[in-house]
View 1 (cartoon, rainbow, N blue to C red):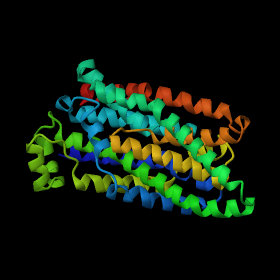
View 2: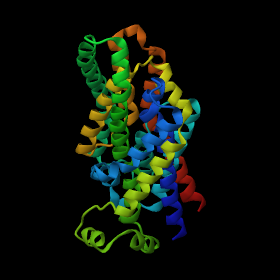
View 3: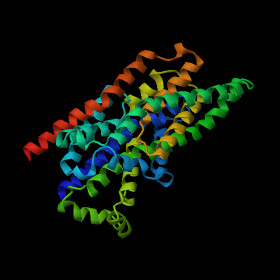
View 4: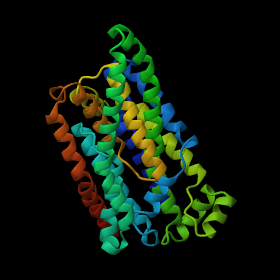
Length: 348
């Protein structure tokens, strides 16, 4: 039983790292435009990260829990490998200041441990293809929506003085930042919910899980499971939302600097357009139950609004470095997870 509790705590640590690592996604624009101070910005974002469970259903958690690896072959060793792969890659990219995707690190971790345990047959192709497709769709959608928002907003703003425009969007950006933080909490926290639910409900969970599962699940949730449903317990939802909010509150300033300062120079009106476009993209993905990368989405949105002003306004060298990190995240996290899975099986 202690091993299962340790894995739940490890999952919550990943959730904390997710918020810590991806804090830049929610606060980089409001810090870069000096609408909020860094400390107040992360507190603001953390509040909306936590409140997201009141708005969004658990479709993303179900995709992670049952749509990447066949839940019937899941055991505690596989979960351990997946979490170590995701946490390890998050720490590496945090140290390098790269805004890679925590979502794809977790998915890569599941795939790596799953492949070592059961081969390609245990992977769920539909869920993986949907997730991989959004590696390209999410930044493109963020780019297009922020650009569209920028075209409309800039045309309206041209009729007013720069002082009035700046004053208005300093206030408006509070709403766009809130919407983005809400979408981020609603999508990213659900990945850890899916992992913990997978651990509690997996087909190979064993008797060691039963006492822990009984503690987390209500009678109605146990009944739903007996009917063959994949259930995300409310207690798990609240724990995961709290962990990601705490991570955001801690901040990840290396990545904040990359996102807020090194891609393009942002004004309040630019930050409003980028956050609004990214928030719409994430809301759309969450409704579909797709574990989208919020990092990809906000990066695409920032590049979009920067290139709308002028192509030379985007530091393409930094953007290129970020994109390379995106493409190696799944295989890198998968390799780390495979190593930890094998070590666990061989040594313990």
